[in-house]
Image (cartoon, rainbow over all chains, first blue to last red; front, side, top):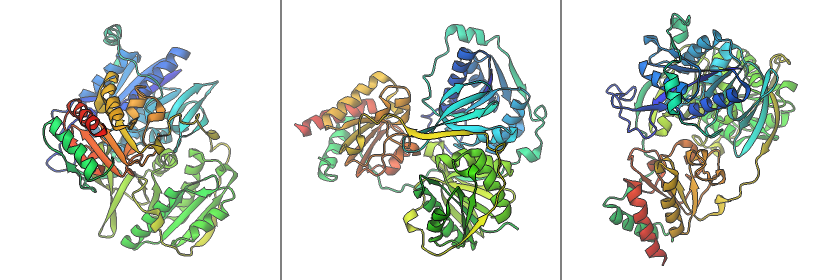
Length: 259
Length: 327
């Protein structure tokens, strides 16, 4: 069983964000990064499937040189090798362009299963895996909370709204987007970190992937980025912790009358 | 020449989903703003009744597509059917609500036509006969105005609650059946029946006071300070998704789109940034208090009272004050 898992590097969840001067993106200086949350669960699911059924896990990430740290982390946790998609032309790709790049890299791998997280914590398109599936001509399932491997097929448990779930069967190869919480994440061990140093990370650029300018041309463009207008007037309570706490409890009692 | 707005109608258990009427309302508003005709499309088997219900809204036309391959939802079936509908109806804009079902098939549909899906939008701005769409990025910390590029049709999905479905204007639309070609080779997913897990052990929907904890708590052992605050207030303890994913609190304490939806008298959000998946589960609370170190956290957009600072200092102070009041 050969599994490719797509990992996006995103600014750490608690990052304080600042908008760049032309208001089209955030300032990326001084940011620290991590593996996108649901992608980390996708990686863990790939490692568990490999441990149970055998095979290979390939960790794929697209982005500038800094994303190699995400691939190395995956290798340290147990992935077998890495694919790093990097090209100046990949800056500012939209979901379609990223999906096309992933599809091109995956096509050369003759894989059984391609896993992604369900959504990124930065752009939040929630489309990349499904777009890659369409461009590869493969079936997919999204927002998955369990994966069972059968003969030439998988059965996945999709999360639906309002507490509903549904099992869906898919022939392999297939693309599955993974929901956070499907499993319990592991940490890299010291041995894993040492082993990772020997593992291959192959770099692929747009030419190697056969991606032309037309495929990568954005189909949606961010015109402006800004802090949302507040819809509700929030009373911010100032002061040292004890003072603020006393003021808040007083307001909850007298203004909001909650007790 | 592509023209007009087409709305995708979602249904389950023989009912049109409430989210679909939000999309209908969005289409009515955008249709008026852009001077475009509106239409809706209902897919399934035996959907005449559903189509008649939708046709009682102010829309130019309601298309129905009937096929045994659309009886149960599959991404392959829906994407293939809609692709054929779009080639016949030639809309300039396809609107949907950003439900789990739409998230499952819409990226495939748009990518198959080499078009963009501008997903999970919260509003639009009509500028010179064209629309740009506002969507949240960085989990709601920032908004982005996004323009679809390239040729029509463009695909847009709106976040649940962005439009008022009950404000959809009434009317009388023509219903027209469209034929599509679908077969077994096209539909590769094998869907089984929908089901619910064992019932939630804790019913947070009835709790008048709720204290909820989020990722800002950092470590499992720190949850104790929030538990103490809940006890001092006589409140139920709840959590955002990451806390339950880490199994620091059981899943039946989770608030949000994949957990419980609550509307208590008081909701105290401790170290919860307020991703939309959480906000949809609690924004109906009468009074919302947010405690967070980041003044730009989206939770402050729905909070009535906020304290910006270190929760490890504020929560114990609040517990002490609450104990005084409750005595």
